[in-house]
Image: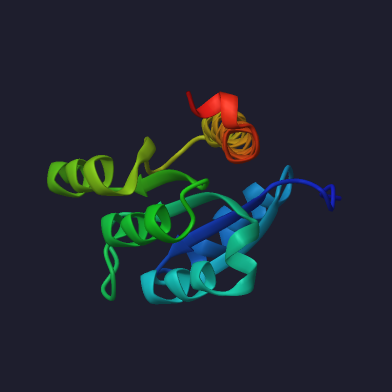
Length: 153
């Protein structure tokens, strides 16, 4: 059973079977929320649950919004999230767009081995922790700068 305090992973794909299999694999170690397509993923990220999303695992080719577009929205809406793109195609335009606009952390090729997915998720979870720590540190520094006149000199 997944730890209720485990990180929340948003899995996004336009194929129900693939999404179901991906969710089953992720659920072994993390909490998981699924989105059938890019529009559904962006809706989740915009909603209250979006703030809890630590990692987005997104297919690159979907008919409504491509993976690069979803990851770009995720980077804008939830900058602390870590983006993984999953694809069965070698589409350099999608990869380039995701890297440049969606802060892509890893690009994974289907079919992906279970242990490869787990290793990528573990790395992504560590990056997420570092991003949160950075945000907390910057908030403390900002607070000190606002309250200590000597700090602004």
